[in-house]
Amino acid sequence: MKDILGTVTMVLAVAMVVIALPKQIRKIAREKKCGLDLSMILLPLGVYMARFCYAVAMESWYILVPDLLGVGFSVKLLLQYHQFKGK
Picture 1 (cartoon, rainbow, N blue to C red):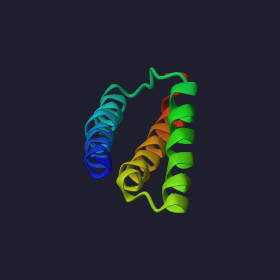
Picture 2 (cartoon, rainbow, N blue to C red):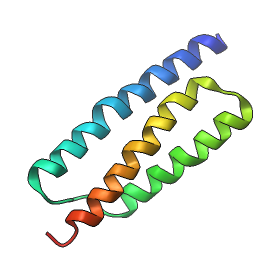
Picture 3 (cartoon, rainbow, N blue to C red):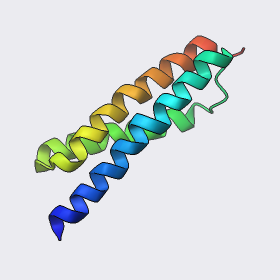
């Protein structure tokens, strides 16, 4: 049961970071403006970073992969926020 729940968690988390976050990044790039509040970028980034560290410490590979991707995409959103803020 543990492996099934781990697999479901990983599949859903990977879907979020490879579908939702890239779509947001493309939308911001296309519109040349970032409509996200800074807290909506920093809080998920903090969650992904904390979960990544936790995954490494607990050797929980189910959440390591999506959280690593989440850190990368969240950093990209943060860079876009700074690039397009005020536009």
